Length: 230
Image (cartoon, helix red, strand yellow):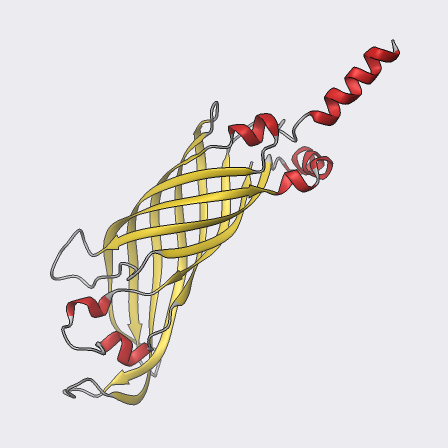
């Protein structure tokens, strides 16, 4: 009897903090560095975007939700994402060559919308409590954008379509306190909590159209955030 109790205790102690509630999907909150590649079509430097907004990179805040399609060996999830980006600067004096900034304030804003397909290899996290879960995501993108002047009125607006691919890795926070993770799952239905880091390649130019602004990131963009698997 003592041996049986000891074996049961060891088994419970070695058991991973795997999800006990049904798997539905994922909610994630994140941010990534971003700078649109608008100046790529202009041969002279600095281009108009750099003249107005400078050479730095901004932050694009993101919110995503997915629905799990498959959860046996890893997770295949279909989802939607949105977010917000804003850059502020000074307008350009009409007709100036090279472009010269004026004293008028202007802002460029983007609300991205995405249809995503994600695969996360979290089988080892579910089964053995290995704290790392790599993933890949492909997305069809639509960037809704508008430009405002000093008065706040919209001077130009539109939407640009494209695609992006992302690779990343999540660190399983359940690993730090398995008991608390099980309580969180029982109380709220959150199977796992991850912090993640990822890199994204985007092409947002209406699939190569010469008439569209190129809102692709000029470089690979790096992001990080928090995911709740529920």
